[in-house]
Amino acid sequence: MTRRVLLPLIGRDPSEAHRTSTPLELLFDLCFVVAVAQAGTGLHHALAELHVRDALVGYSTVFFAIWWAWVNFTWFASSYDNDDLAYRFGVFVQIGGVLVLAAGVPRAFAGSDFAVVTVGYLIMRTALVAGWLRAAKDDRAHRRTNLRYAEGIGACQLGWVALLVLPGELRMTGFIVMAALEMTVPVWAERATPNPWHPHHIAERYSLFTTIVLGETILAATLAVQSALDSGGRLDEVSEVAVTGLVAVCAMWWLYFDRPNESQVSGLRERWDSTTATSSFVWGYGHYFVLAGAAAVGAGLAVAVDHATGSSTITPSGAALSVAVPAAFYLIAVTLLHSSHWTRRDTVALLAGVLMVALAAMGAPVISTALVLAAAAAQMPKSASSNEATSESSPSSST
Image (tube, rainbow, N blue to C red; front, side, top):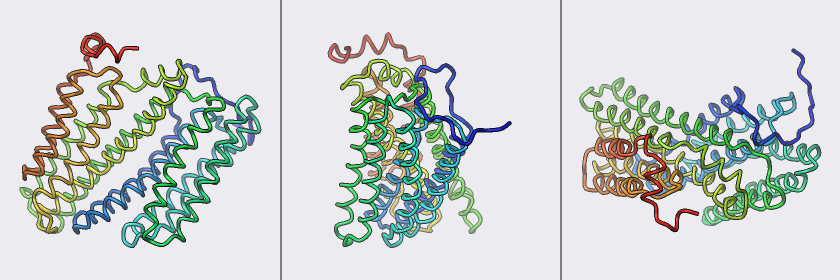
C-alpha cells in the first residue's frame, strides 16, 4: 500500500462515527510513560532521602512538562490526524523529544538542571508548531485559530529557553509564569473558531493514558518490592506494601471508569459556548492532578518499601503520607472532574480523601490508604444512575 507523503491537513468531522485511538497514538502514550516513570523515580528517591521540598518542586515541574506536551499533541491529533507520512514523521519527532526529556529528568531532580529537559521540550514543540502551521495553511476555516496556536506555542517555547539563564532563586517564579502563559494559549486560540476535536476520541485518549499511568504505578511498586527482595529483604516486610499497591491501583481504576468521560465531553462539544468552553478546559486541565497523583502513588509505594526494609530513615507516618497524599489528590480530582451532578456519594469520596491523609498522619499502616480507596470505589458502583444524580443534586446544579 502506497501512502501519500502529503495530504491536505483539514479538520476532521467531530461527529465521525467509530473514531478511536490509533496504534500510533498508543505508541506515543507508551513513550511518554517512559518520562512519567523517570519523574516517579526521581520523586521516590527525593522523598526517601527526606528532601521533601525538592521532591515536590521537581516532580510538579517535570510532570507539568510531560503532561502539557501530551495534552497539546492529543487535542491537535483529535482535530487533524490525517495519517499521511508527514504527520507520522512529526509524531516520531515528538516521541524523540520526550525521550530526550526523560533522559534529563534525573539531572533535573539531582541539581535542578533543566537543560536537557528543555532541549527535549524544544524538539517536541518545534514539531507541534510545524503541525499547526501546516493546518493553518490547509484548513482555511480554522486558519486564525491554528495560527494562534503556532504563535502562542512558539513564543512560550522561547520563554522556556530564556528560563535557563534566570538566577536559581527566580526560576520557580519564572516557571509559574510560563506555565500560566502556556495554559492560556488554547483559551486564546479557541476564541477565534473552536477546532473540530472529537469528543469520543478525546475521552478515550484521556482514559487510555490514565490506564497506562496506573499500569506504571503498579510496575513501580512491583520493581520496588523485587529490588527489596533481591537485596535481602524478607517477604513479610514488603507483603503489606505489595497488597496495598494492588488494591490501591484496582480501586483507582474503578473510581476513574465508574462514570464514563464521553457523555460529559460530548455535551461540551454539542453546546459549545463561553460556559461549556470553560468547562472543557477545566476538564482537560484538571487531569494534571489525576495523572500526577496516579504516578506519584507508585513513587510513594516505593518509599513505603524503603521504610519497611530500613533502606530509608523516613518515619512511619512519612512513608504512609507518601502514598496517602497523592492518592487523596487522585480521588478528589477524579470526583470533582467526573461529577456533572453532585451527589452524596461524591461528598463521601471527598471525605475519604481527607480521611486517608488523616490516618496516615496519625501513623496508620500504609494499607489503610488502599482500604479507604477501595471503600470509596465500592460505594460508587457503575450502576449509579442518572436518576440518583438528579434526585440528589441541588436545583441550582441542573441547568
